[in-house]
Image (cartoon, rainbow, N blue to C red; front, side, top):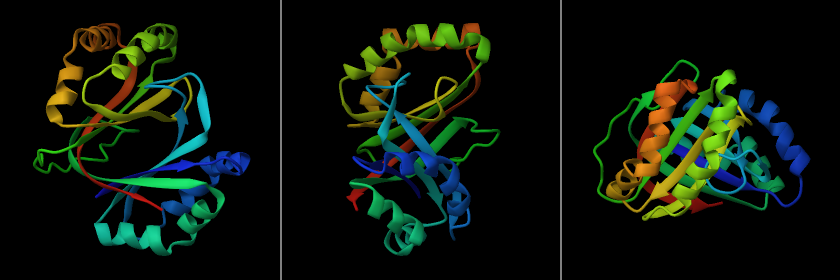
Length: 216
């Protein structure tokens, strides 16, 4: 079981920013939590140079759903997030497998069967420093293409470090809609440049059955 919680603030934004450093060590000790990242988000579609200081993403992987529910209902850490934020929406996901790594490990190796419904995707890249200008040169074109993608329900840029560590979370109507975008000419062109010019130091592509969402 994987959860990604989108946490929205209209006040307490400085407090929220500080949690990027303070909260993850506490969350790593939560019973049943196998993987955790507290991520900033970008404004607009896809990757973004401009941070969105009103929204953060809490990505967690669990031993099972019961432990996730206990965290969201009873933990001091999540209750504190609820008290400081305006709203939190948690998406529940089931891993369909991942290719690549996130700081040297694949956090989502489990491979369930595609359920036939909505599908979620998390992509993450650590960009080679000397390739940053080339990467950001193509970001507007990539963002425009996903903004117009048929079957896209939601997307948000997420990440640990602006400029060099970028990720996206997206939800699609079904697997075919996601594949149609992945194999579209513009996306294929950019992926080709990524491989040929060695833009990324590390990358991860992960897919999930979309289970449900809950507003806390």
